[in-house]
Length: 114
Image 1 (cartoon, rainbow, N blue to C red):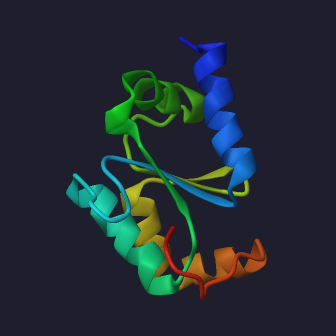
Image 2: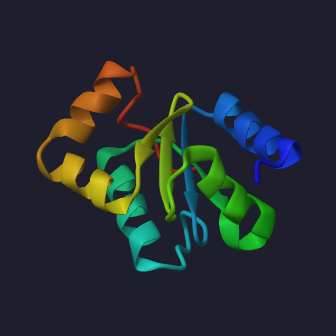
Image 3: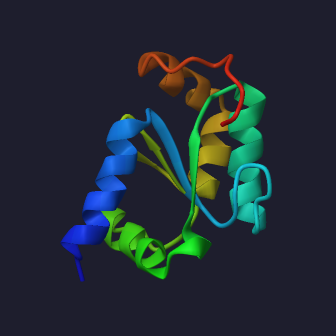
């Protein structure tokens, strides 16, 4: 079920922001533990990102799963590329790979969360 309108909205978010987290809740008020974990990692690294609250729009909530072919939320995108969900981000952070990934993508790790 690939809705072109929903995919267009997802693509617009990805094109307008270098780092996008499709999550439950907002960066200030995550509404699930997995989303909170990814927010904490990004905040700790000082990565500026756009949070998209999938709880506000059922079409986006389902559409992002089809868009990425990944069944769970949160989903982190960097420069339009799907990086992974909570477990992948946590593992990359713990082994130092996430910092290297952001550096390789020329993502600043000093800014505050939007």
